[in-house]
Image (cartoon, rainbow, N blue to C red):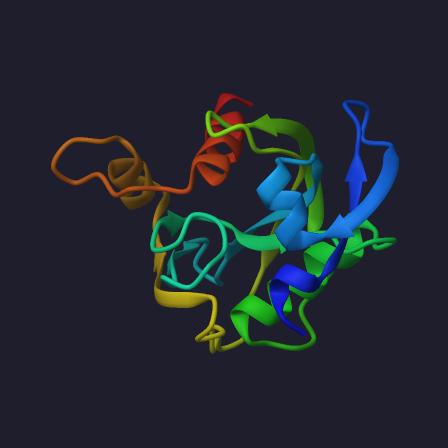
Length: 171
């Protein structure tokens, strides 16, 4: 199925379902929906970081410190977090990601989604999905902080992932 045809739940400011629509319509009309963000650590505690492919519907070619994606219609956040993490990392048998927090992301571009943030350890060899991931590495917390800090070493990050990263850093 074409990703823009995937059916999503449309939700209100309290994260209650108020309808359903295809993903392409949800994005085009700026309808509020649900997403998951999964912070993946390897056996050494380093964080999986990747650059999204140029063909992504949202934030193409930007860096992200989370894997994840939209929650399908009728799907739970927990199920979507595990599904998305396994798909993007190219693994099976991953432990259920641990929920950390949930927040309403409201972007400067008018996009808005409820965002459930998770943590998971992946000691399996990863083979990221080529349709989703153009480049990847596992970075230390210090390296990630340097890359998110702007300046000469800074990378251009997806704004929703950066918001989740900053939220976790404040905790």
